[in-house]
Length: 318
Image (cartoon, rainbow, N blue to C red; front, side, top):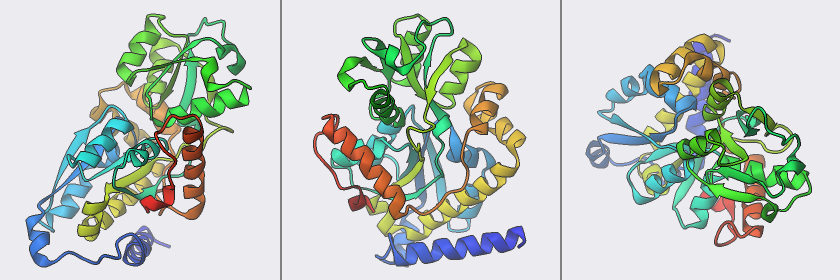
């Protein structure tokens, strides 16, 4: 099948998905479509949305609809979803944990799609000369992470594998830049982090990977929208997801070009983003029951540990 045929088939599939599922509310009126001249997208320093921003194809596609694109970078998923909840952005991408925290806090968001699992894109790292050699050695140690990010669940599962309770470590919550500073000066014993910060720690600091997500977590990347925006603008959301699928298809075949674009967009060295990109999973898909079941396990784990204020039903955000 030719590339154009594949794209046509994908667009048809996505169209059927949105017509039948999340966006059953129907298309907006001509008046409301004219009133909405901008889609505001939140992204982080990694992944397909950064690549999409760098290529500029979404802007070209939406220009025909008289819709512009506003991009806002966030340092981590939890603050991105805060932006979604308060109405400063309409659409964004995060890892598996932030939607759980956001939903538990009452955010009115919807899952739009997800990338395949990418468990090696996050890890627990220690300094190169650290005496910590196993997960069990983390007992009593200071472990820094961004609270509510995808790595939060990785830490929970890693401790569980080692037979440790969450209270057996000293969890320190800092955003990536501050966490790196603490790690670099020796103020913490281990750092739980995701790409490209993970790749930068390996390449620039000589950090040693104690354990990554393989065998512990799926580490899906999710695309989410505010429910009100998704219901009022199904065609725009469909176009955004379709362009994500297109750039995924291109990126999987052009790793060198991906590294060059991401380096330009993030300001990171090419060798850092090349390492991060080599671990990334391309291929956006509709969120299915199996993925939601995995998300429910994340939610239940956080609820049991009292890390979220209440138990949630993840499928309520579909």
